[in-house]
Length: 403
Picture 1 (cartoon, rainbow, N blue to C red):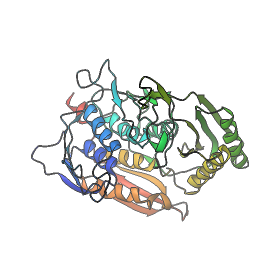
Picture 2: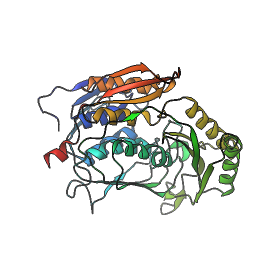
Picture 3: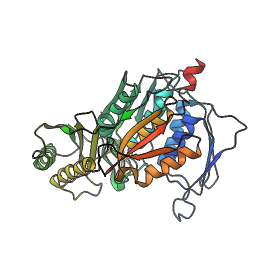
Picture 4: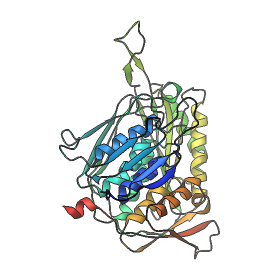
């Protein structure tokens, strides 16, 4: 919980909005974010998905203070104690039900990844059910990964920090982006029951060689042969690279939402129709590389193109080098900064380290009092990789310490 007399750390623009709120909650530092879309003529201020994230943080913490200006362009956030799904603090029967509005255009992974970072440092287990007309479980055009990739490429990395028990991510109802990319009416439940005082120090320096590829082809409200066509197209590219390739097929019906037609107010309409593919490559040393592609809301993309695009995206992720992919790097670097006061090391590809959101993450960590990163060349002579050294601050789980 932040000190009431502590001055907030100042940030500008909506860039890295979720990352800054997550780091502020973990470190207990108040922040002030200004100039959030001030020049937008149609939708100035914070967006619907950002409001949903603020509501989620308020639900899993106790004592947080959130103030939004009248125009929505300034947010003041003073974090409280991470309590998780504590009875009496918003949880009903040990489950927090978080409803995502139908106007949300981001995938539910936008909310899941920050929540997974907060869960190990909670006072009690975290059990959150995401429902509502705005839950999108697939990948989105905004860059959000699918829930399948969170389950297979992000959550397994927590085991490297000693966080591996009672963790489950359930997809209760699948959905793709609805009309104009808004809403999907899916349903996802995250159960995170392993809380720690401090994560273990990570040393991940050997990328190894790719030994197997796994994936999930999914479709909602469309014929099942779309999955077979995506899998066949992806295997045509991946099979020459390695024989151990297996892609599961998941077919589900499209979810229904209440109709907005005034002539039939009691009727229901289908939404979240589409298909997509999630692929994960695992190396001999346990490193994971993922790729995600889903059909656009406007349609027009044949399943063969989706399969080939996802396969090429996976190969690009592996070719970027390092031991951590681009989508998982923020999670790994954040957990390394929160670990015990020791030096952790991870090998990253130069393309991963030079990404804009990774650079912004390093700057935001320094502004919030976490350690700066150190860099050196690899000892293996790989010119494409850099070894990043991170000193943990030992902040850890304040709620567990108090208990």
